[in-house]
Length: 280
Length: 296
Image (cartoon, rainbow over all chains, first blue to last red; front, side, top):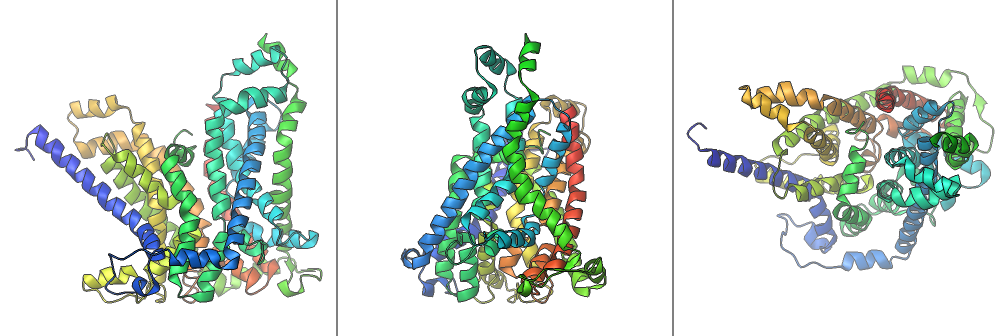
């Protein structure tokens, strides 16, 4: 290395870094490419060995999936459940986050610790007791129950993220608003909410991701008409086994929000993922 | 002035702001968890769910301790958890160290690396199941190009766990990479430059300056990944459903199967209690740090 000039060394270093990045990207992207490519292939092409790398893409898997009567129903179930849970959880989380950020009261620290612990609860632990509970009150196989669970599962994270964002706002704005005659609720809706919009987008994306992707509770708590997409694709996998074109088509459709969020809101995502770990 | 404004904000209002969250968390998380704890002392077959459960005291727990099946599941969980966390931490940290600093275009690639984390676990399971397919999966095809015999990734009891671990490493190494990279960006430039000026080489700077600085991020990432992989379920559910045999049947899958295949709701609740206690024990580290962060 010593006979290289500074510039050559820098060039070599950069070259090496790009090599690592590109090899990493190939590993990360290949399974995703394989999913999308298979969904665009005819069945005969999907199973060719050696693989047909160059093929004429077809949407036939998608049209078949879309016109299979139940797909649209499952898709709408997923959309309704995920959107309602997101709105509900972010709204309730913002209220609670504000309460925890701006008031001092006895037991506040235990509430915060409790919230952190609740965040770690694995959904599978709720499967049996919630199944029993819903069975008793006749709520199994309804969408309302699923929405409530998703709100509860995501609330701890949202309370915590939104509280962190609210803590960073200057108190003076709220204080002068109170002097101007606002009450606590109008201070919250007119002053605080608009200012924590970035926090709400982090919370919203994470809630939507969990509600849209969730599998095990939906598997146990829904029936033929209220099923969501992740359950549908899983049952498709065990029922047909070999129709990989259609299976990867549904899988790709499930992944669409993930693509959209990744490419439009990468900054919020990275912020949400690293929240707590880096900032502490 | 500030004092009077504070006094005007009644504590009662704080409770009102917290009320909706308390109701939802209480009704949908706390009450069911409490009921699950109670249920773990009962015998209650799924098919006679209309009849009342029968109290059996600690029998479910006693049976678990003696069960070979349960022990196999604990073993599978430990192998899975410690393998993925170790591999992801090492690979993710090395990648972050290699790629730190200003590299034109890195931002775009960092964005790409977020994709696996965002994609639904069901989809990850489905895609990897296809890639591992013995006859038309791409992995065996690539290995064949290198002259390696086809591997029964998901059917060979000696390989299935490795297959599941690889899929998890694919999905979560980017997470470690992103956290460590964020941690490295917090290392003050003066510090690394000063150590350079003092004659330290790259390895010395790394060990004595950078690693101590990011050690808390590393520790936290490790705990987060431990908790998450400990409760991991959906990818394995859709890739192997615990098979072949019980080689990949981790605790959360064992819990599910006990409830809905063996149809023993009480026994399943006992497994849930054990899983929850283990996860809370792991989470404790996080909570303590969280509270410390509050006090700063």
